Image (cartoon, rainbow, N blue to C red; front, side, top):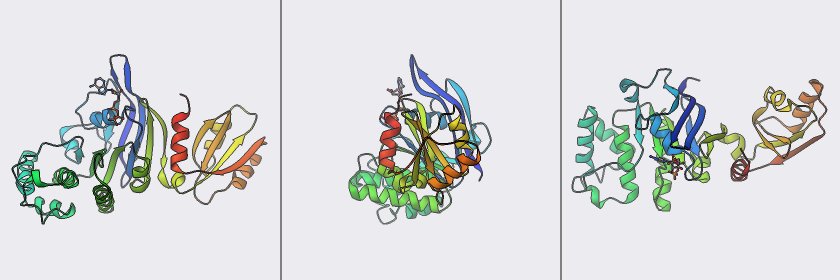
Length: 297
Ligand SMILES: Nc1ncnc2c1ncn2[C@@H]1O[C@H](COP(=O)(O)OP(=O)(O)OP(=O)(O)O)[C@@H](O)[C@H]1O
């Protein structure tokens, strides 16, 4: 699958604070990629660097295999913070102004209003919109130039349950239309419900990356111990391995669908390794998230 985004050793420091620490990440076409992490873990700073509004201290990234440039950024739509809309103008008028600034055809406005289901309310003043409608208008604005990638920072923050459900449904609809989506969230539930892949940041460090399916839907996790130094490296070469985490001197291998502990055992045996401990577990994304964040780094 084509790489939409490649991040290499991306770092941002604010004085002594390493807000983002040597981040390496890849996002492929068609993924809904969640950046998960508690407050202050570096999600917004990362998105800011990717959008060119925060200067990296070190490292680099490329969009579609090209270094960041004005032209490349035209293929990316973003809702990074509350956008500035004029309260006394209608949704339609606000989008007309945005279309002018972005130099995109006004014909696109009807299409994006339809996508975010605001066509009926398009002539009402922005100040009469609910928070959820305001967020949908912001997404409509980000879609005006028909971007290949959509970036969303905490898209459901502050919304009521109905508004949250609307935005999540909308994200899925946009993803189904073929766009790649990168979203930052501190909500596990959000990532589990809308994302295909996710990364976990903790104090600026990447502590996990992988598909949501492999962990969220009760993927099999096998705890393995063996008295060899490079057990981790060997397990990484096992075709059934999705991700590996370390805990109390053992490797916790999350398996891909269709693989089981017996396959791990056979693989180790074929590589001349005798496991001193091999135990299957099931875990939810929530349990995994808590485990990842509680591990020391
Ligand atoms: N302009 C800045 N100057 C100084 N420190 C900053 C600045 N921007 C961010 N930080 C710090 O960098 C760290 C990462 O912040 P960031 O906003 O990227 O995290 P986040 O994961 O998006 O959190 P949140 O969900 O709270 O927005 C935090 O400790 C924050 O205080």
